[in-house]
Length: 333
Image (cartoon, rainbow, N blue to C red; front, side, top):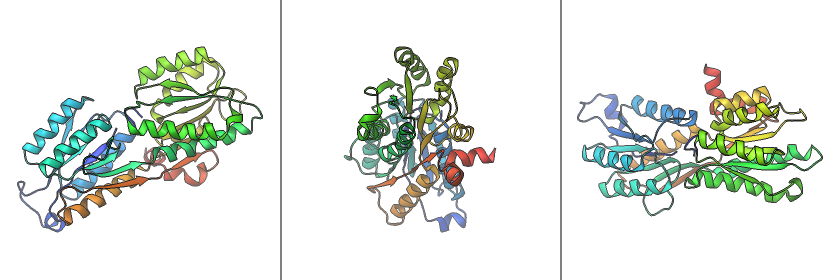
């Protein structure tokens, strides 16, 4: 997922829903500004849909602003909508640092803020934070990959496609990967090969091509975001390495997010495992927390909530595929 681990920061200051149900003038209607960094992956599109539809169904007016991946522009957009008198702000920040800066601006303005999926880099500002436990989710997917590697009766050469390490989500996913690497030292031919992606498909493509050329024996590959699977296929397929599980040239493959592509690849047999973020549950968690803050008149709520997620694998696919948001979207097509 590009700008994976991206974050929704949701700020909500609303009148009681009972008043909405009775109808109100445009001036009295609750206004929420949704200022996002872009919607270039399925995860953020799904999250955007879940949140905005829920708000609009509740009678909230949503004002959307796209910063086009410019943190400074987003900061100015937030200041502008606050000046316009919005009741709340929803933001997908560029990184953890900008999340802190924007949270402080909202705190000073008396606007409660909630951080969705990508956390601020520190806790110096007050916010409701809902975030996936990236370390645990990544570890669960890579653990399955390791168990499959054990069945091969030989050592494997591990590699990880690393996200932008300015994003706390990327840091957590990398740590989860290494937790498994350190757990089974006997499985590896060498230390893991790190392939920078910066959450950018073009960067990922160039670096994966270089890594495979320099290390043609890579046969254990974890991508920190599912949105890079098409890139991986484009590199492995011409080399005869894009094979289904059980094939002698199959590269053990794992990822994290739970998008439609990952669901399709699991069902086709190319993908061994992916860590799943529950985007729908995360949206519900943050909206519930924000409504509680609204009812209590708390302009600076401060609470961290975690989505523990799970790994969808070849072993539990039949039982749990419809627990993954990407499979739900796939079924709706």
